[in-house]
Image 1 (cartoon, rainbow, N blue to C red):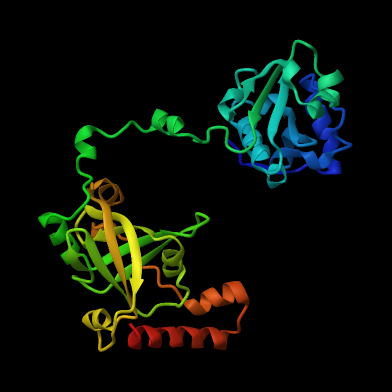
Image 2: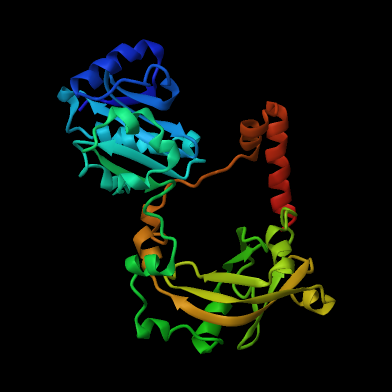
Amino acid sequence: MHTVNLSPLEPADVSSVFGLLDAANLPTVGVQENPSAFVVARVGDEIVGCCGVEIHGSHGLLRSLVVGPRHRGNGIARTLVEHVLSLPQHAGITGIYLLTTTARDFFPRFGFEVLPRGEAPEGIRASWEFRTGCPDTAVFMWRQAGDPFAIRSHDDLRAVVADAKASTKAKVVDRLGRLEREFISRAPLLFVATASPDGRVTVSPKGNGAGIVSIVDDRTLLIPERPGNGLAYGLSNMIDNPHVGIIFVIPGSTETFRVDGRVELTRDPTLLRKFSARGKDALLAMRVHIERCFFHCSKAFLRSGFWRTETWPEPFALSWGEWAKQWYDVPDGAAKKLDTDIAKDEAENL
């Protein structure tokens, strides 16, 4: 199969598209007048297909889907439909409609459903295709804008993800036991997830060697904060929304340990001295009150082969200088200095 390239319809393409539409007994009205609504598929220099979405008010009308006879059966029609449905100019519409006499069984794979013609919105009713271009026997179909397969309810979710077994639910507890304490005491790295009041989520890594977290009792943890980049996204979230989620990781261990709870920040000097490292007190401490916790199974690490060193790619050695050049077009000298300054900071300010 030859490579298929998609591109907007250009004036020079119209005659070729008309030829395809005429051969398929599809209407050509409106194509030349509204070329920006259409996309063509090319194999080499040959136009082999076309599809478009006309905008009528807040609705879209998918039309003129055609593929030349010699190129059918190669997935070009699917590619065209997926492309036009994903175009950014369609982001504001509420639904996409179509009329078809031959492809009723083709469109459900994209989330289209049959709809009585009497339920067509006014903008679609006013279109030439609806009024004149397609016979009354054409099947009227629609799909909701966006992802028609989106999971929007708990029932939708449970139709895909079966409820956990009772034995799985039983592993979720509200305090630490001996094994949980041991795991936390050996974990040198954890990830803390927080959310702002309006729901924006961020995740921050925390690391300082085994024993980074102090276990106050079976429902309370203390986590020190070390010097960082100063953005403090997660810490700011904790002030506004105290709910946190934490994952503890031990190198080589495929299980992880998860904690959900509420957090408060403290600058108690006694605690900050207790958490001193490399001659520096902690900046502050997070006091986490555990609400639920559990061991997470190994599947993610087993599937990814994360701890299998023979599968590891080459390390990604980020140059902050190159990053700055990419985004801000800084000169080479400034980029090299940035790399030097960051290396110095990492060596001296952990």
